[in-house]
Structure formats: C-alpha cells, structure tokens
Length: 116
Image (tube, rainbow, N blue to C red):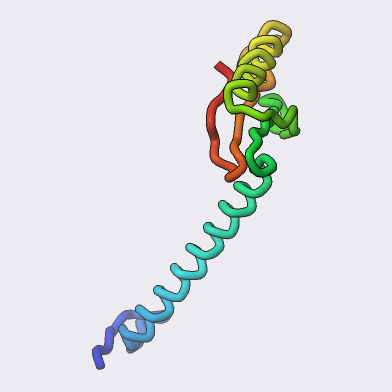
C-alpha cells in the first residue's frame, strides 16, 4: 500500500493512503455524473412533445421565462410556426437581444430547430 506524505497544517507531515483517496474521488465523480444525467433527463422530459407530435416552446430573452406555444402534427408545421412567431416578436421588440424566440422539440425532447 502506497502512502503519500504531505505537509498539513502547522507543517506537520500527514500520511494518506492513495488508494482510499482515489476511491473517494471516483465515487464523487460518479455521483456528479449521475446528477448531471438526471438533470438532463428532467429537462428533456419537460421539453418533450406528446408521442408523434412536435412542441414549440417560447423563451422570453428579457427575463428567461419559458412557455409552451403549441403542439403540432408535423415538424414542418412546428418549425414554420416558430419562425413566424420569432419574426413577429422581433418586429415589436425594442431590441433583438430581448425579443421572445421560439424553439421546436420532438417527442423525445430533442431540439429540432429554432426561430430563423
């Protein structure tokens, strides 16, 4: 078993078991990866359209608010709607950086297209 000697507080030499340190680091990494996967799954589920449909989500770039704008039978209809709504909002916004934009997602929560 390898020991690592490091200087701790007040210059005291502290021995540490490298294997146990490595095991703890691996466990921490696994926990972080699982947490990230859970967060991605929750986001994907929130954005997913009903089976076989396509969802348009509006995002207000001024305050970050998200809202559902419609459910469509085809991707083409959804993307066309998203582009038209974005163009309309760009015309009325004081600046394009704060205009509401629209995104399209399929029934798996995958991003298909956006505004323009």
